[in-house]
Length: 264
Image (cartoon, rainbow, N blue to C red; front, top):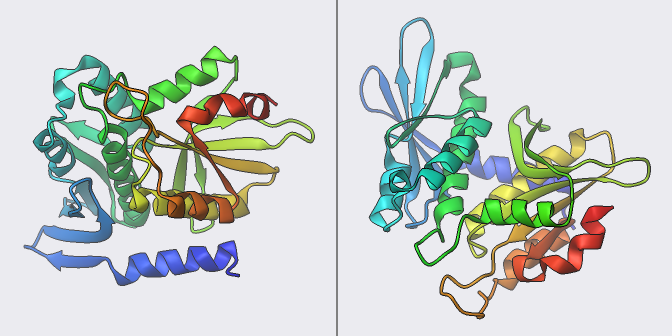
């Protein structure tokens, strides 16, 4: 059986082997990465060279424009816009109208490319099921669940992983004595296999650098987008991917079964 370290090394080799850089002009480089957005298109970023080794990494507005093409208009909802800006800030990403970008320097390019990619993947996942038939955003629903049960959490905690890149968790629950710390990710679209693999990479990079015992969880939104009691069937391969790598998947419909465990 592959170890976590071997899985992590395979993952980052796959990224290196499947990421391409194309020089468009003297100041612009196109970066194609092996991740798909919610339209199954490859995610593309651009590097714009500025003066004195400064650069801008940008999605050129693609992420938000693509969501609007699917009928999800973030700018029309103050609630969605506020949530978007809060999450982007936690990744160190700025927004100018529809454009997501990071101003940085050449020496910090790898870290900030990773941050922008993480933000793009998270925004795609966060709003993927956020149509008018869904009440609220999944991140907020999970937060409300914790509050309702007096489970004290910290939001948007980041850790520098084994590769030196930063990995963010939507929630963390501190541990004490023999009780381990709990680090929690969320998946709005529970069958988004690409985002599931990204979560696995975050965990495998974070686990080796933590000095205290820790348990990792993923909340999966298995509610149907229509107003009925039917639940979304989650691909068992995704659940197995988490389970065999010591990441506990929690279906949102079964969240009450984990109150005692998460409250410890």
